[in-house]
Length: 381
Image (cartoon, rainbow, N blue to C red; front, side, top):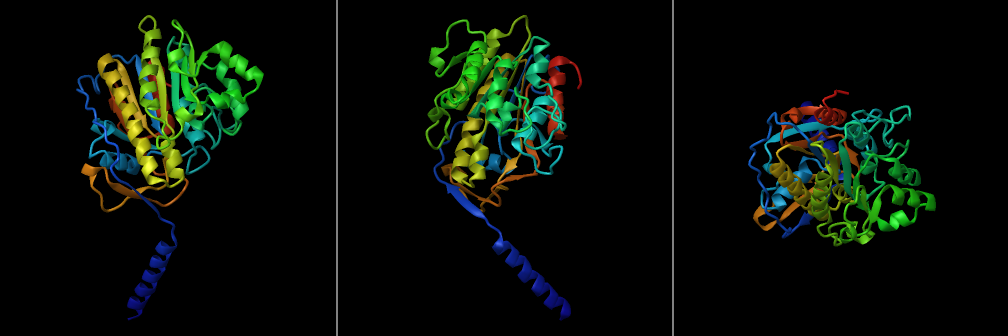
């Protein structure tokens, strides 16, 4: 009897704990579905030479976010049609749960750092990022994001600042970067910077606010569209991410000289922002949009034969799980969030192309960065 009473009391305590926990629920109905692309896999996992690497980061994207997109899209995504998978542990140098700056820096430099740090080590010293390292080998680089150009993830690939909140300083790092192409938000944010910073950026890059205005023969291009064109997908962003991904890949490919290649980082930033707000339907829409950008990268890699595509995340956001009922054929799914912040859950990694086999299994985020450098330069960090 005593044992039964103890179990009963424990059960009440457990139930009370669950009821006290905040579970934010949401659904999406009739999600806009797209046809998932399946490549031929002819060169996937092969030992063919790698000239180009495309790193795609779905900010905040864990397995549940991918599953939400998968089932909302009728049970198929381009990213889930790939055959090579792994997992990435995302801890930073000083925290069990990372932020985007520390994780972005790990991918961009091959070194872990402190939360909030952008492109610097744990002592605040600059770390060489992938574009800087590759420039020594004649390999060019680009960055695309649906975030501001000074967002934590894109900043990690060109800036060196102790805190991600140092927006003017991060903008000021851009003209001295090793980027050949960038596309991000926004024209309005750029206009707010000092005259000195604006002038330096315009001297370093041909700066446009529409891809229709790109002059022929441009050597270094910066694309900063109006803020309305990089807002959330739900608010009418349109095809900015997949269309700009394709444009950026073609732009870099057209500027590759003497068989040397390029590196491109593409970020779907607003999956994370939707999950922070515990907004399920917008998160699904962002995931579906990101998958269409993935398709552009995979199609490019398939045609090129010497391009490796890596799709992963900086961390998971929201502790998302899926509801028990849904109808994938109709694009109807639902989910529950348990937090408005990040979680330490390992994130999925998908890879396609020659060298994809090096990304199987469980790895650290900084390990991914070091592998990218090694595959493009032949030098291990």
